[in-house]
Length: 397
Image 1 (tube, rainbow, N blue to C red):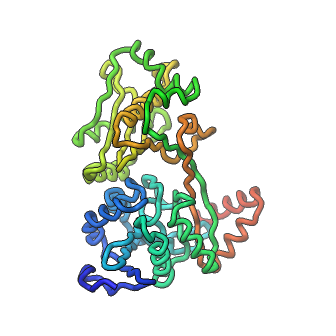
Image 2 (image 1 turned 45 degrees about the vertical axis):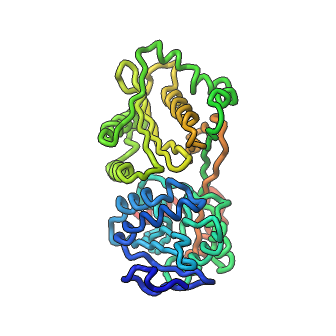
Image 3 (image 1 turned 60 degrees about the horizontal axis):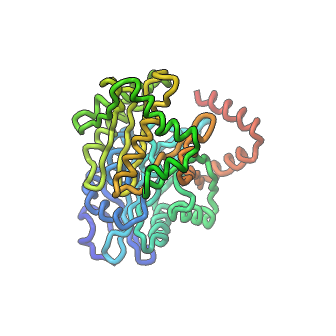
């Protein structure tokens, strides 16, 4: 067991599980001070290098932690005096449909069915490559024994991740109810190799929209791509929001989300970079793409384009083609991640011929009354479920 001086002076003595010591970080100041050790652990872990980075997690908590119902629950695991894991969690008081109040445990990065925030994917514990299962099990034992919570919502996790498997294992051993509350899909394009070979792997129509229609683009005027500096992000986000208002009737980034992304961009580390680009024709913006690189992956966070600009062009797809080509050209980038989002009518991202990624939202319930109610609900036919949900919604009002 590590000596007491391995921990902040204002923390309680750690609780030990099979040689792994768990402590709780003291509030947002403790969270803020973790950047260096968090980044060191992330480098030797299999955790996602963007969504489970200190920069993303701290910026999310700083943006959406307001209100008396939220309580930071940030845990660290030590083994042989070395940091061996981070559990970025929080507790929230939630009123369910029908009026029942419960305490919800969830990972920092999402506020499931309660408030709109940016979406955080690939969620789980930050674990080392060696001994990850034991550390995850220690976190879960600690959460089970020392905190009162009624349900644990795990949003947008990978089903084969160690965190997900260990949560299911504990739920089964403890007699808790666990069911998948949602599934979404994404595509991850391997960018190691030749871009032209990648284009040849695409269907004819997709290749036309992604690349071959560049000729048509140049017929319309002088084509260029401008990229925002850190001082220009506000104006680029304004254009992106304007495109979304024109297409969807609402902005893609409301004020809190803009604050989040501004904070995040200002905190990016040496192995992270943002690419906020604008496709221009005769110096007029027609499409915006917002990507972030973390480690060897570029994440396509958001995009928008001028609606009905030219009937022969798919501006968003053409701009995506430029972004994917740029990822292929950077030898430090191995993947272009299109993230979750299946589309309204079809899973359009599969046309880009990447590796499919499935994101699962798991709902674990340990409150006895809530378990019974959910078991009854899950057993109902779909039509009855819709009637119950409608009635519960009316009661909530």
